[in-house]
Image 1 (cartoon, rainbow, N blue to C red):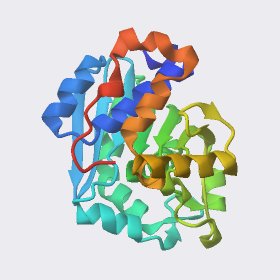
Image 2 (spheres, rainbow, N blue to C red; image 1 turned 180 degrees about the vertical axis):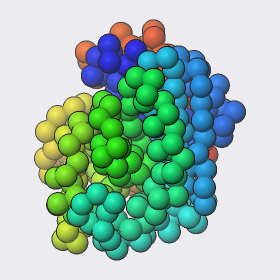
Image 3 (cartoon, rainbow, N blue to C red; image 1 turned 180 degrees about the horizontal axis):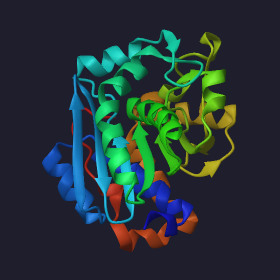
Length: 267
């Protein structure tokens, strides 16, 4: 039961589920069942994709992030025109379109399963994080059983009024120089939602500061990597969540996911 987990345990679990969301149905089913989920549903329409992971207590919607080989995902990321949201305020057009494609299927499932007193959670990485935020916003208008939202490497999703309207508890994780968390630009009116949890260049939760970011870029350069891109890797978010000091006990529960293999081409 997710509500009985510590914050650190939930952070790791949802990071793992966000990673599993990149898998095909067979692989996702196999890995989700290892984590105690008994039924898995795959939503797929016009390139927008998400999973429902469910057991007797919990229902988790995990949206799939950007896949570099999928033109639909790239197009969604680039369509940064602000349009009216289904709720209030303005939201990113590309992200909204991805949610529009899946929402009828997701809503039908939620309305049916929530009547069984399931606790609802949302999670996602990258584009999936943006989709997750929008889905949670819509969900709060149709029922009140949303527990929390966990996102990793999320871009900004909407304008200030939209962001302020979202009342669900949202934990938003940022890894050092992750470039995706800095787009669309603030000057365009876009704002972040949720409580930010910042991992410094050493993978530790801390306060963000320019010195840490500069050192992160320098250390990435010495390793031969582009830090702003490498820091967006969902695998790195999993490692960082696993290594939160108060969180060591989860390793024997759900495995050492720092060695989890991310499908090729996904970051």
